[in-house]
Structures are given as C-alpha cells and as structure tokens.
Image 1 (cartoon, rainbow, N blue to C red):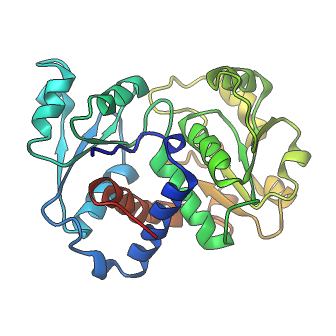
Image 2 (cartoon, rainbow, N blue to C red; image 1 turned 60 degrees about the vertical axis):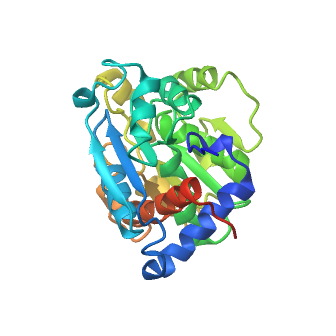
Image 3 (cartoon, rainbow, N blue to C red; image 1 turned 30 degrees about the horizontal axis):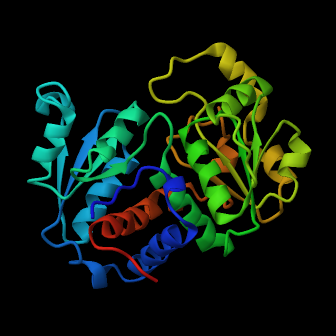
Length: 302
C-alpha cells in the first residue's frame, strides 16, 4: 500500500505519536538505525526556495542508508512534457518516495491521489506539516507532554499556522492565535469557518499570552508574497519582543521555524535568548523527517 504525508489532519493521534516516538529512538541512537533505509531512494522536487527542508531531508535520508536525488521541475518537464501522472509513474520506477515543495496545495494533493509513489508535503501554500510535527517534537522534548499546554501564535496567518491548528486539534493542546482582526477574518474564511475545539482566535494580548508555555511566530511576508508596507504596519504591534515574553509564563519558550526577519517579527533579544529553541527546531527536522520516511517506506510502531 502506498502511503503519503500531506497534512497532519489526515492522521490519527496514535499514528503521529508513533512517528514522534520513533524519531526519539533515532535521535538517541542514530548509529543503530544507519541502514534501515538501505537501497531506498528519495527524490526532492523544489519549486520554492529552501534551506532547512532541503538539507534536513537530504542528510536525514543519507544517515538512514538511503539515496537522494534532487530533481529540477523545469529540466524534467514536470507536468508539461507529459502528464503529471505519467511523470510520477516513471519516477516510481527509480525512486521510492518524492518530497515536493510547491505553490499549489491542490497539485500536491492530486499527485498523492494518483497513488503512483509516496508523496511528502515539504511545504505548500496551504500547510507545512513536516515543520509543525518537528515543532511538537521539540516542545515535548523541552516541556514534556504537549497535551493541555498552551501555545500562543503572533503575527500573520500562513501555512505553518494551518498545520499548527491541525496539531492542536489532534494533540489536544490550547492554541491562542493572536493576529490582526483584518487577517483574522481572512483566516476564518480560509478555514471555511470550521468549528475549532482547541484553537482560539483573539486580539487581546494579555488574555492570549497569560499562562502561555510557548510563544511562536513566523515571517510576516511569506515566500513569493510581495512586500506590503501596509501589512507590515498592521503587524508591527504583533512583534515578539521582551515585553511580549514577560506576559507569558516565566519558563515560556520561543519558537520560529526560520528564516527570521530579525527585529521585524522578532527582536534579536528574544531569538538569541536562552528561551529560544530555534536551532533545536532546525536540528529536530532531521529526526522527525527520518521517522516520516521510515513510516512511508517501512512503518513505525511504538
């Protein structure tokens, strides 16, 4: 059976828990698992820029004994020289899993629907499940079980936040979403006004930040989006700074998936502080994605 990793809400808490549990085992003893994907091959298809996703998948697969090839969509004529279905069928003769990072979530979902080869969502305009699952891994490492913890997001509504909302509903933690009212209306529309149990949109800073265990943000201008001075002005008061961090719990951590626009969405004083886990986040992408790869190609069980 061909399996895919497209969105977190496609999985049960048990399935994602098993992936996280196996990621912990890999991190504790990388050498033990150095050949578990021997003779397996991963294809990487980037239609958007990438640093952490590119390197972590590449190094992660190699450290499991697998092979990696980076593909150029223009050079292979992805979806142009022949149908996307035929391209995927051809690739399935050479590689075992294909990670795609693109601008169209619909195309990504369609690639999985063809069911020719395992597809991983390396980021789309809708979601970023690999990032957020590794963030859950990082929070759990630092604070223990994430259930009933409180995470507060400040800033824009984007693909990372969509996956974080999915995670909150699955892992049963409280997510306060502190964003401008104008963006809030757009966000609710994108979510089809779906009733959320654990995620709460708000614009009251004190209320949203009180009792927060983790403060998260991301760049205000997403990849491919034109820089808007009016948007930057609207988001200015949502910057994560020392004042914001003091409103959360004393031991609260800070997270950002990177790249960061320093002193825009987050100040140097916060991102470089001992509360910041941004580099642990980046490192943990390797172990969680290794576990995802093993889940798709072999399976993982507690």
